[in-house]
Length: 229
Image (cartoon, rainbow, N blue to C red; front, side, top):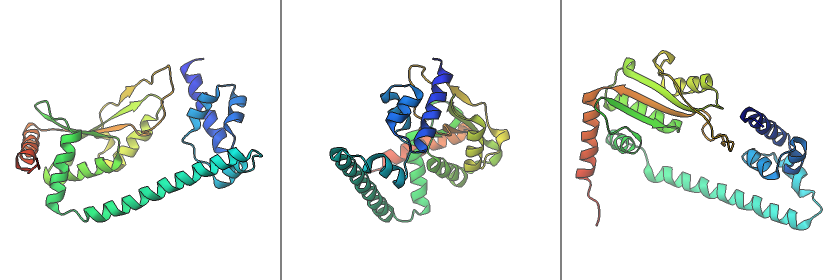
């Protein structure tokens, strides 16, 4: 079976799962292995009604009990994450201008281009980090809107036009300032789970002086920080 055929099967499997079918039913309908069916649909959410129909009405008490335990564990995990998120937001508090300045330097150090002579570039798949860095470049680096360029790193099973529209909306960079998308072929021996639907966004500003200035800020960050020993 070709690569396109596998993608089609994966799409059918996900649609069947969304309709509430069991892994075994999907396996039988598509004539694929149970492991493949399970991997393809493992991130497809089920409604409470679908879950009850698939599992809670099973005659086997052990299966019912293990599934209920699994669901309870998932709920406990979600609740723990929610509590720590709320606490984290409270612990950090509102960021003042200097806080945003330092946070941007640290984020650029982690995800920005540090080599090269002329390009300031930042890449990430997380929209929140891209929005923050666009704001940082505008506020602290005074980058003119016409100087921004955007490019996307995208797997070939994803929609390029959809990704471009998404990042254009997120960054407020006109599509006319987008560079050619870097299309990456999926490995054909396995289907890649679509984790980043819109790919990785790369923001670039061609400015030698600005790159040197940011490198200076990074040096200052590490030079002036008092690290306990």
